[in-house]
Length: 326
Ligand code: NAX
Image (cartoon, rainbow, N blue to C red; front, side, top):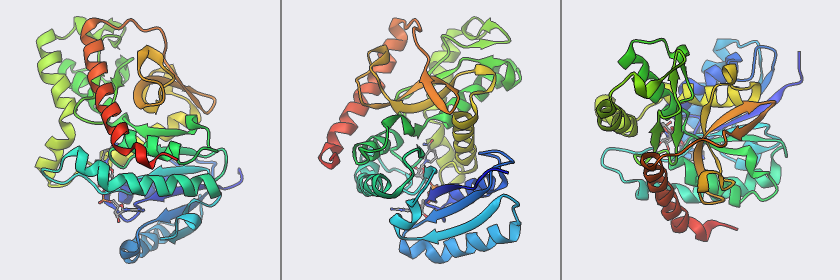
């Protein structure tokens, strides 16, 4: 057995965490040989509900779960943290614009960035789930200057998974036959689900579906899927978001399955002429605990327009919160 690692989850009494925490504790994220100390962070009014979650964790008797600490003190929550899943945020409700979310959440992530910078492990791997995830991750990175910005990522894996399933259902194909799907840009309705490099059982995906379906059905339905789910169930995606967070971290730590691509919001190094320093979703391959952007893909005019539209939205978001950069 390995030495225990410390995993912090924020927003731990929320609906995504209710699925996420139990899967982390079971070993699904870091492996069945990795003992875990769970640190659960919430705001003060949610501590009672969080206590209930910890009682359920106790009652699950997870063999890998060495200790549970629950708190409303960020310094305790992030102390020596090796992995942090930042879910805590105000979720998007019916009719709420991203700009409202941006304002409500920017402060949370600047404070958490400074705290992580002060007390977390220098090797920490961070996934930002709370929306607007890309820009929250950017604020965090700007406020945690001693943490390598390659260790701070935002979640677009749910969008990636949604693309895979749309295509699999259209072609009646197993998900496992689909390779090299990609989400570019922001986790928002400007995101660009790209099938130009994608294959299904070795055959180019776009030769198997008609362009009309791809452009007018698949792209908008992936872009709007979050809103569609809110409309149907009255609250935002939870179990599927938790699943995507587990897959994101698992692949980052253990490597992408079969060297396939995964989509991750990461700090742009200027690849594909995307503005340096934005947190932008790129197709990545994970290996040896690191992610790398897939390079040298041909980008046609159709793709470029969509990639740029999402980049412009991220620039606008960044400019709206730049007063919180230290
Ligand atoms: P919930 O409202 O159920 O839970 C959020 C929890 O965060 C609450 O319990 C709240 O008390 C807590 N919280 C608020 N401020 C906090 C702080 N400063 N420190 C610690 N905890 C804090 O929302 P839930 O449905 O779990 O969604 C969480 C976030 O994920 C939302 O921002 C949501 O928009 C976002 N999502 C992101 C997705 C992605 O793909 N990146 C998809 C799913 C989801 O929409």
